[in-house]
Image (cartoon, each protein chain N blue to C red):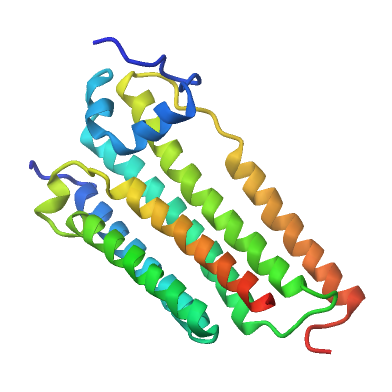
Length: 143
Length: 99
């Protein structure tokens, strides 16, 4: 069976990729069925990313509600909105990566390489350090 | 299904269960924030309720032993979009509070 898009790194235009998320029959048409355990492992990896996204969203909602007003002005809202945006990004990227991995496994290719985990880890680490700096040098919360 | 030493289907079901729980807790935080934001907050928390109900309805077969033997269907993208929708509702509530 010929895949409708070239598998692997070239995943076609945005619309094709979004169709890959929603259309399981398309994913069923490509290549051959891998061991069901790999499929389930891919699904659990997606779910772990989704819970990471939910942790970021819940962190953003908690920052907005439970932090006192911070100096400089709007810092609290900035923290909340950055965490919420990161959560949305992680969720959308999780489903896209799930579809790409599923396609690679069906075509018996290398799994798609991704810089995303490294970028996320750096962003969270640098963000936490920056907040430590703000608290130490610009005044503790609630002062 | 033959015996599976790794209990993969069960682990996947439990993983969906944890995710559904995390989704519900996030929604409760939206409710708490929405209740403090007047009429707009009320509307946004009701939108969130619809998102939560749709996501739970679509993903629930993945939690049950019979449903999880079928393919995932739209459960994955719908749940991911629900998380993104919650993030958007949180941003809208934060912006609304700034006035």
